[in-house]
Structure formats: structure tokens, C-alpha cells
Length: 125
Image (cartoon, rainbow, N blue to C red):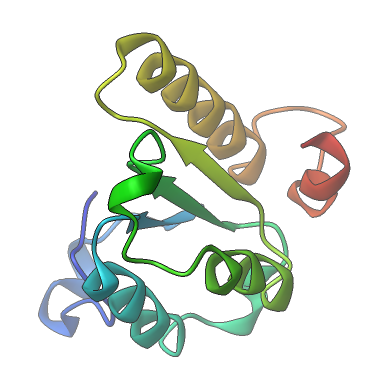
């Protein structure tokens, strides 16, 4: 499921499936996307930061068009003990590799990989 920001609307809580992982997307070309992520973080239960959150930075192939301070992105990852992934969505190979990586992370977060905990993402990455 995709949401543009948090909190999620409460009127559909009874229909919403369990949330196993949250991926915050930050477009390197948009300061608004970083601000939106920072604002949304306040609505995430602290228990999710134990291996169930990651930050995906898109548009990294265009560093010359960068509107987002990369130190701020790295600081988010450090402050929330969550991995930061970088991706150029316009390159199919990179897009596919990132999708596969996110899917594997989701499988771990959902508990579908025996013997592996999402708490170990920092060592797995």
C-alpha cells in the first residue's frame, strides 16, 4: 500500500492489513519530500524503528539537481537506526535490484525468513 504521508486515515483502520515495514521515499530533487518524511516520522510508533523502517532516496543519478541535503538524509538513518538505500528509478536494472532488495527486507520484517531478524539490518546491509 502507498500513502503520501502519515498519519493514515483512521476511517479504514478495520480494513487495513498489518503493516510489516515502512519505506520512506525521499526524492533528492525535492525539499518537500524530505520535509514530508520528517513530518510523517512523528506518527510512527517507536517500536517500528527496531528494524521495520528504511529510507529510500531516489534520483541519485542527478546529484547536480540535488535539493536535499544528503547529510540530513544520513542523519535520519542514524537517528532512527534505519537503513538508507539509494536508487535511480530511471535505470531499469537499478530499479529491479532495489525492488528485490526491498522485497527481501519485507520478507524479513514479516517474519518469513527463519532465523533472521529485522533487528540485524545494519549488519546485513
